[in-house]
Image (cartoon, rainbow over all chains, first blue to last red):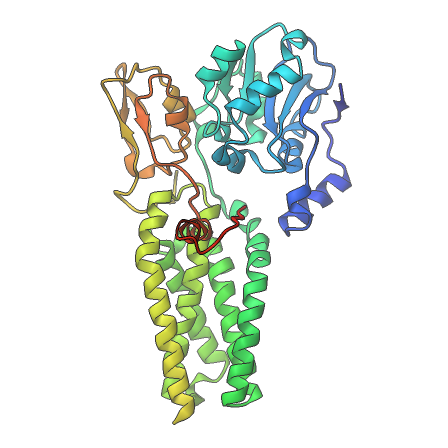
Length: 321
Length: 94
């Protein structure tokens, strides 16, 4: 059985940084199975996690000077929360992994410590029935594991209260950019050629700046300012950041010199683009619901499409006359 | 959850109080404090905070909870819609 260290090396930290930028993210894995941290014996606690290396690292790194078992499930390199939603961090895999690692021969107790966010995939009562192991949902964050273990396996209310701090939002932004890169490049290229053809290259360059800024306002500005933007709808929050960007762009790019058509088109198209990226960020938050996003999309997507088409029509009219 | 609120009156979470055995498992797994013990009875105190993750329903030994859980991001829902309308064959998601 592999004996592993609780210390994160420079390579671990670099790897963690790389996946935040989407580099090798779908293949950042450790083999599933049972691992030993320190010198655990048959009484030591068993902590369960996913085989996304970042999940496994976050668990082992808080176990310095401790003796624990870590049971890593095969989640195909996906973190606990997303894998639980998909069912790979799930009842069946846990039961299978308990058997494959012969856990009943390794420990004498029958308790497993799971992350709270894994509960969406694991039915504790079914695992108990099949394997005899009791599941304790300890905490949301790995950093609370030491306190949980030291307090006799008791979860303080704050440990199961989800947070979404500024830093927790900031680390998600690089991936938002990486995901937006390809569609933005295509849209920017189209925008440049069409505007350059209808008007001139300067106008094309300006249009691309406006568009890219609107993507950034939606994909980075909205997550960053999330708690301070009024309203509950993400699309609405995106319209706000997009409008702020439109005003900044208007002032920086000499908007007073634009035709009325161009100004109107910019103020219709840019907030709609931001709203789309803001709406897409719902997938990264730990408090939006599927039904809520569905409801929002029914109103927001047609509204965005209308604003976009009307804006394009106005811009073309402006260039034509 | 402090500082963040999403749309009201949208969650599909339903509780069948007749089936509930007040084991408190839902309180243990809910990251948004939707449930609480009122005396010895489990009640929903914060319905609008529900993010439909499905952890409560999954871990309810009495099958007293129901919620329509699943992919909740716009891109995922658009992909799902396209697939349902046979406009897309392969589905990729996070």
